[in-house]
Length: 387
Ligand code: KIV
Image 1 (tube, protein in one colour):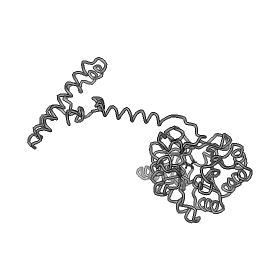
Image 2: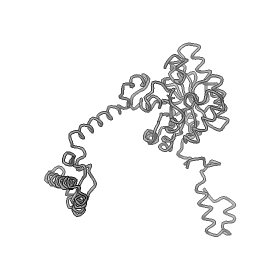
Image 3: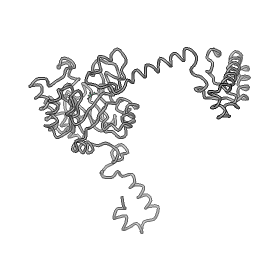
């Protein structure tokens, strides 16, 4: 970016300090935008609605995954996922509820903020939770504003396509907030749907899916989630709409796909698992098995005293300090503690000489002479001795 004309003309007249101040200011102005927005943005990196539109135009599938906390958000970001959805599915996969209904707006905001800290590149979409937008358009706008202002999201998602829901979507868009619609199986409506049931399986229901999606597009939504509908119905909606459709259990003919983080990772290994992992979900990993194995191994190693061993007891204290420490303990009348200190230090010394003899790890100790020359104490090294 070159200097603006007014600076070029007058730069010779400006004092160097004034020119520097101008240049520093300019470096903070995002290119191609009028205002910078609430977050420092790199317009070439952050996924925006414009990027999604371009992808859709080119026929490139849009990738969406849910995230609920900082680590899941970082993983999505690192993997290059386009859209990060802070779904109200958090109620089920994070909070352990049977449905999405119980999660509150305040709980959702905690998830949104954590995700916003972790995902810098994906477009961030926050779900409006059940009971926070159905009463009126004003209520819907107020909730959407909080999701952006307090949750750090870029857009919101709302479920359903009744007349009042379409009006609410329109009002939110008019308030300057991008809206993702959601039709087909809308889990917040299980009370009227009679459970987690696929939709669009008969003529009337299939037509309703397409008509509702069209109405959401008309209201200004930038995309629509199609959940649990037959693939031909999703294909019809995708063809009828100008905006992208994002399928979940809706087959391959959508503009993009979304899956729930825990489901795609094969993470849930608790009794609710069978209930909350839908059959359309492909498990790309069995992370739950890995987690279980690690936890059982940890439990066993703590129980048999092999963890923490020398490699995980890194904090050292010199022989001089340990002697001074023991005499302070004795002055305090803590003779038993002083004896335990001495015993632990001795034990570690013995262990270390054993390790030095050991060919397998001896080489690494010799490579670190400071470990061998320093008199170490690892306070919890031999738990049994200290107790
Ligand atoms: O809450 C959620 O995770 C969702 C997806 C299933 C689309 O709405």
